[in-house]
Picture 1: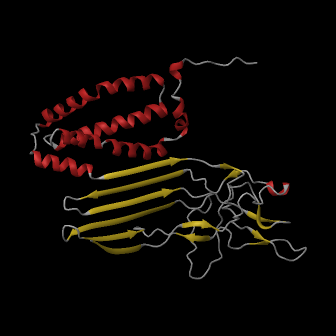
Picture 2: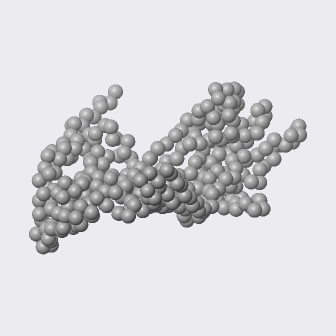
Picture 3: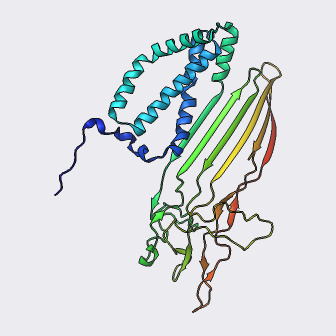
Amino acid sequence: MAAQTHHPWYLYAPKPWTQFRTVPWKRLWLLLTAVFLLFSVIGFHTSLLQKGNAPYAVVIAIAAFSGCNAVLWIIVLSRLTTPFLIGLVALQFFIGPITVWLGRWTMNTFHLQPVPTDLGIHFAANSILFVVIASYVFSGLTGNYEGLFRNDNGQSDPNITSLFDLQSLLNNTYGRLPNDRPHQFKFNGSYRTPWKFLISGNFYMQSGTPFNKLIPHAIYGNNEGFGVQRGTAVVPTVSAIQAGFPNIVDSIGSTRTPTTMNLDLGVYYPINLGEKRELRLTGDWFNVFNSQRAVTLDQTYSLNSGVAGVPATVNPFWGSALLIQAPSAFRFGAKFSF
């Protein structure tokens, strides 16, 4: 038996974050950006504690330093070894003095003057009122059992699906399940102006779901078998069209439905009409870029002919769009409360 190689403790990465070591930088930058924006608020909070006297450049410098310090935690935990983590923990004891030095250095280098208290507090408070919530999820879902509901063929028989009824139904069933989306990014932000006008936005982007080649089963009928390994079918070019329905598929040649993204914007303005009366005006713009990518595709490759001895009929719409994103739309509203 070959002897196992034991590495010193300082060459190992923190165990709770080992899964992030396989995530490439081009995917990890979304998480780093979200963390930077979230923790940069500390700079503006520091300005409020100083009664807004700090010059704007100093506030922005401290905000950038706070965000970079948070990003450094992600980099150390996901890419570097334990000694770097120990050094980063030790660095936190000096964050306060470093922040003070950074503020003084910025003022002396650029010959800055303190700003009036009212303007400084106004600047810092308005910056904090800009709320940003961002998230990125990197995940995978493989197996041969999705759950109580089957998304691949739409069977809704909790606990009695046909998956394991017959041995012949198990062919090619192990693979990427319908809810497997490697990348999901969400961004929500809002800003309230000094005159109470609120602007908000929501953006999401997510990978497509695995594409399948569903075939009929001799006993159980249509969409009960997999022609190839689950989740590995290649999206074909479909020549068949349906009048009045845009058959545009942006993932031809891949093994997934198209990546979808959407941006929604909203505005809100309250009007006080008295001590207990208020009129609220709202406006929403859904799907700003009018993206109409396919959300689901036809995964039925062939259908039973219904005639004994006649082979299954190939579905000419296999790989075509079944459901697309809703087009751009506006909504306006008013609410009166008393």
